[in-house]
Image (cartoon, rainbow, N blue to C red; front, side, top):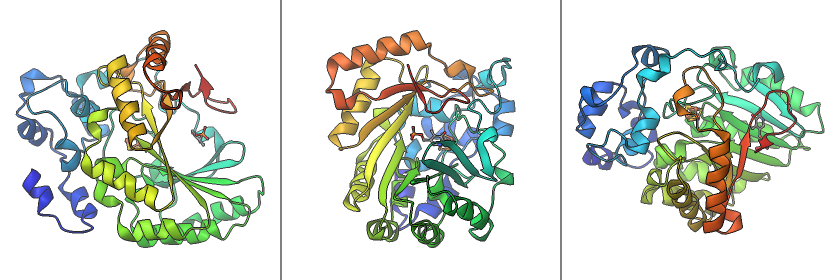
Length: 333
Ligand SMILES: *Cc1c(COP(=O)(O)O)cnc(C)c1O
Ligand code: SF4
């Protein structure tokens, strides 16, 4: 696997997307695991198939069925448990859609579902049931949304999200940035992405140059849940983003079996601040259908944060939040 990654040259991230593991059997083989060691969900696999790039898989521990990175991508049988308070749109995205793919939930900020594709399928994802097919496919189709932003001078920040906006190729992103920069009252660009973590080569020279040239204040919000996700390549991708003038933050989700202990959280947050990445949010799990087995109670989450606060500098402790539909901001717990 390491040799397959090493043989890829230059800006090979699209090749990495093609080489990503989609076959559960192949993932088990790569990690020396047996089907009997694990639970398995045929339902989850069909609705939201396994997708794990080799770069991410290479950071998993061989032979460990409880590996925190493996658990995040493995379709477990618990996903087919149906619970009435776990729904398809737990955060009320569809109610705040101003145009297809344009979400205006909070003052001054709009979020655009710039791409429905991701470079990894995280089993607990709150948008795993989002109707991506109805969102615009080309930059031309987004024009109505850009005009909506143009007509509302209260919008100061555009958030590119998804899916993962960095699944768009550099020429397309260039057009997105041109269009956003053409709206005078927009001052800030925020990019919500997991790509620099799962395929660090996505942070290309072309992309970095484009960010550096932007008149917008650029914030990049990564999504990392465990310190093992950060290897040298990820650290270097983060450095390149910072070199382009972007401020890099991280959001994590509190996940049972992955990071629900004070050691795992402290290690993650400390690794982040060593890289000058601000731990922004720790999210309480959104109750999306199929994700009930990931939940950690709020009471326990608060205990964990209290413990982390004893160990780390104040700026290393993220805001522990839950998203409640209809609220004007994410709710601190
Ligand atoms: C979370 C979210 C944002 C960003 O919220 P911040 O608190 O500014 O990080 C914006 N729009 C939508 C729809 C969101 O879900
Ligand atoms: S990368 Fe983000 S949007 Fe994509 S599956 Fe993971 S959590 Fe969901």
